[in-house]
Image (cartoon, rainbow, N blue to C red; front, side, top):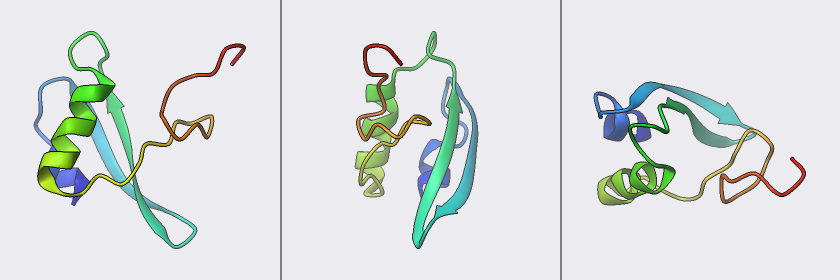
Length: 68
């Protein structure tokens, strides 16, 4: 569902559906010069598909920690 909420949106380069354990996750590649993480989250919330954000480093808020 997250894929359809983000596909074709300005600044979204790709959305790939996958799995992490038993949970469906979407890997999103986006252009931060065009769209913000907050906007991506808002689009997902509007579609009713947002649960939480995981970064590649495992942060649940999607942001890098100092020193990362």
